[in-house]
Image 1: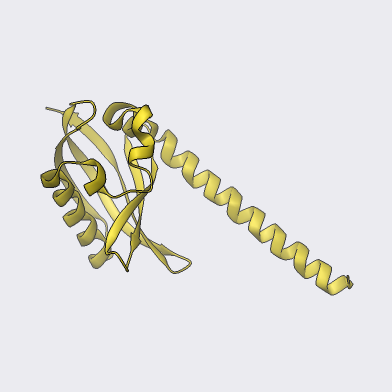
Image 2 (image 1 turned 60 degrees about the vertical axis):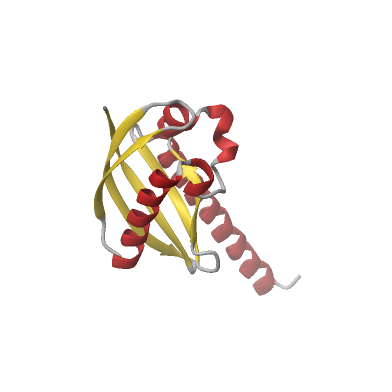
Length: 143
């Protein structure tokens, strides 16, 4: 292996490790957020949003930890009742299309824990390596 090839390979490996560390930091930030937080990936082919990360509070209070697999990697329509999933999707669409943070108030009742609340927070979109994401952070106010 020539010196320049090895140094280029080492550089690429270093960048990959850095990206992995940054991804781990993002997941840690989302999972430990004290309110409700999540990130969804938008798929242009299916025109759907797929859940990729959720805060621990979201998991424990709304979907139940034993049901995490039923939501991660899936859409809101796969988990929430149609009326609630539609509200979430409309607000996700607005955040993605308008490319500015959107304040939302979304009423929901969890189909797993039966907790009813209103989510009050922000949704916004961002792009990384050609992939579009929608994120949300906020609090839930019990009703």
